[in-house]
Length: 74
Image (cartoon, rainbow, N blue to C red; front, side, top):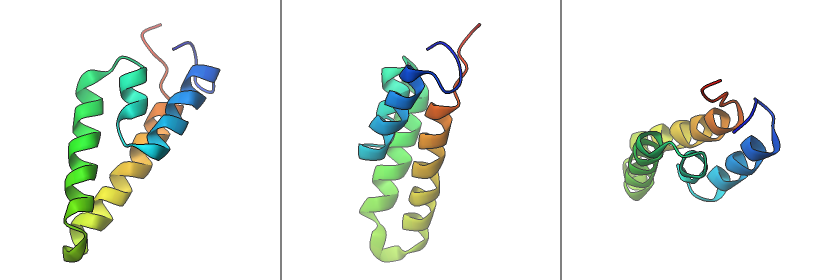
């Protein structure tokens, strides 16, 4: 991806709205994608415990912002 706010970053952020970590996967960042996906899916699966769901919501928002502001290697 080129720069912060580029079309690729916007597409990645939109992908993250539908599934956490998908935007990082589109950007080629496999480890970040796995971490966001595991934390969010696990937290949402435990929604009845409330605290994991809140943590998952925060991570989901963080994944969206991270994809939108990613600057790349150069």
